[in-house]
Image (cartoon, rainbow, N blue to C red; front, side, top):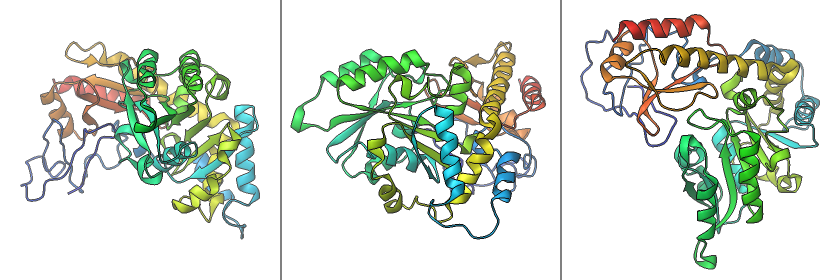
Length: 389
């Protein structure tokens, strides 16, 4: 039995061995709508259909595939000391309009954990939103890779940290008797599909800096955030006080790989050692770097993000016209959170659709659009939903 798991918080689905198969033609062994649902490995109905379950489920964009093919010639020096990796690093300096330092790792959990740890000692803590990936979806990897580090959740509406709540936590320190806050971690776009705009980041960063905290941004969907904010990457990061950004690629057309971009170059001094110790220093680094060259050249990273955001807007707009459907959070990037009646969800599963339910506050369905989502995908989903009422 395949395990299906939500990417937010404790809302997980785990297979239960020994349960009998349902009558759903081998597609689902069982659909228990809240919070568990299960799928069979034989997903014949929905095998090749583009879905709304996760932007992680999408394929590789053609530019990335072509770049990997292009740079797959001959022998190249390993571990990132090659011209291909240097070229990718230069793309980041150009995009962010500053002399930043960039490293390429395999995945976002490691990227966040190592980036945060670059500022921390064992007696420190990282402050992040209750529904951030760092808090609820990384199995305390920041504490594992940085022994002793504590994660402290901060509340705020719609997935964004409220400045007053941040100030309240910072006022409650107990000196040597408690973990000392060292990093403020923001997620942009957030795990609830909302956005921190530059002025909001600047306000939180100012509070952080006054209390000697570094500012980290989990940008698994940074491209979607930048596209939605209608500003430059620089205006969304270092110009408003961000010290390090995890720039996500996997959700925007890469096969795998995230970039850790340091604007505080001093904090990056030992990062290669952290990568090596944690198994994140790729020997064939050129193939991580090559993907970024394919995505960043000619602005494809931004256009793909603009497209997935537009598809989410199309989906949200159509769903908002259906009386029995409730939109739970503002649609600001490529995610739509909606409350769909359980019987309707069950019928959508029968029709072969895949999406997570009971996600985040309000226990709604999370519908993710991807770089390759089409208008026809959106319209077909809504048509089937209307027929499932």
